[in-house]
Amino acid sequence: MGFFDTIFAPLEIKTILTIIEEAKTKFGRSTIFDQIADKLKRDVMADKSTWVRVYNDNPKLANNRVYKALLMDIDEELSTGRHHIYRGALGLSGGSLMSIADSILKEFKTTGYWTSQVVDEQSIILRGNIKGVG
Image 1: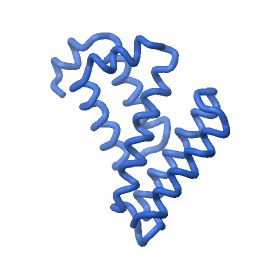
Image 2: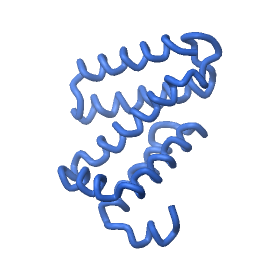
Image 3: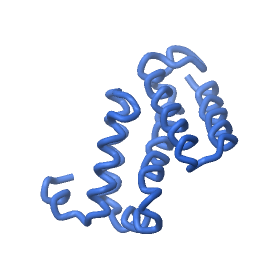
């Protein structure tokens, strides 16, 4: 993602990149989470048309849609087993990612993006994925 790519990106893309950058501090600091967020930024720049459409579908939901993408990437990262100290138990980096995932789920509940039931189901699924690897 080059400097000029960002400068000349559409306003929708700039907004999404800003949301991603703000999420890096909003949900808690973690080197792994920073890497996940930076990867999402590269993905956004590589597929601008899709993200412009995501934004334009409903600009009010842009934050939550970005957070959902981050949550999916966190789930994928935690499901690799690289952040476990032993089967089903997260190490420090995994624990911080799990804390960030919980913060995102709490945000979904607070904003009404997902119902409490959906948030609880997603939390159970995420924890189930963690128990299965390591």
